[in-house]
Length: 126
Image (tube, rainbow, N blue to C red; front, side, top):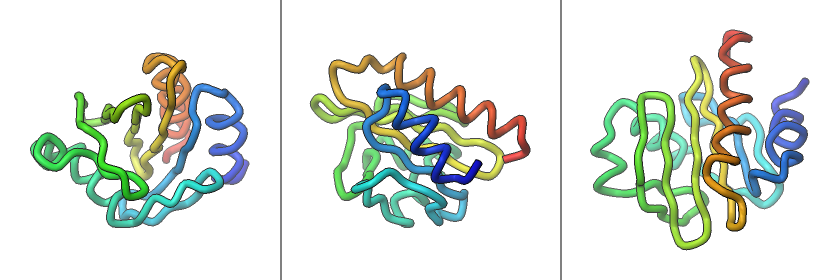
């Protein structure tokens, strides 16, 4: 399965995620959903935020030019929100899965889909 297939067939097709991307820890975007214009620098800041939470608590999480309010996270998960749009990101060994979801989708629905794919990628060495 290609990276684009993971975005289209695992994330977007679930209807629990409205936009998604998979990128490397270096910030290079491997695949993204149509119209999701996430930048390399934005991915880089997200990746850095997994190790240094203060980067996100002070500056928020910027995705495709929109700044979201950082809610919580761990060394593998980042959660953010702005209005009716939520963010759920998961870091794997080599990649980061970035997703946006919109109401009425609940945060746990998006989290389940993103983390299921992330866990699968980890078992595959990614």
